[in-house]
Structures are given as structure tokens and as C-alpha cells.
Image (cartoon, rainbow, N blue to C red; front, side):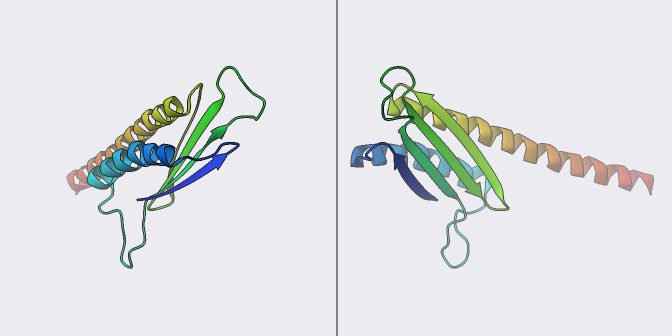
Length: 131
């Protein structure tokens, strides 16, 4: 899994970069590669899963309220994208909230895949019964 981090109106510190990689990279990569995608790389060593993380301040003059935002877009094989966004008063809280939203998106995607597989099996069974 490849993680691309972009900081807007904000300086990216090494500790924040490590925090993002540990929260988004490790947790999400384990779930996606173990359960849904057969492998995180294809022949030639190219990554199939790519996470684009954007963090920053909403504006330069904003002082109170939800000042920080975090956006994550995960590209999966087969033109599928999962997206989550959060605005919070602290950058770490925004990253945690985005991670939780991504888990929800992954669960929705997983359930849709499972439902379509079952639906195909039911259709196949009906066709077998007709003959």
C-alpha cells in the first residue's frame, strides 16, 4: 500500500507523518489485503492500493471551532475508490475520525460485494432448477 500525504496551510512534521502512516497505513492495509484484495502488489512490484491523505487547516485566519481537516481517498483495483473526510478541533482527532469513517466505508463495500456474490449464486441456482 502506497500512502501519499499532502499538507495544506500546515507544515507536516515527522511525528505527524508517522502517526498518519500508523493509523491509516497499517490498519487499513491489514484489513484490505487480508480480507478483500488478494495481494497489495501486482506483477512488476506496482502497488494496487493507493491512499491519498490530505491534511491541513481549513483557513489561515480561523482560530476557534473545527480548524483542521483530513481527507483520505483510497484507490482499489478495478476503479473502485473509498473516500472519507473529517473536520475537527485537533489534527490527531481528525485523523482518528477519518480512520473510523474509512472502516465504515470498507464494511459497506464488503457487504455489497458479499450481497452481489450471493445474488449471483441464487440466480445460478434458479437457472439450474428450470432445466
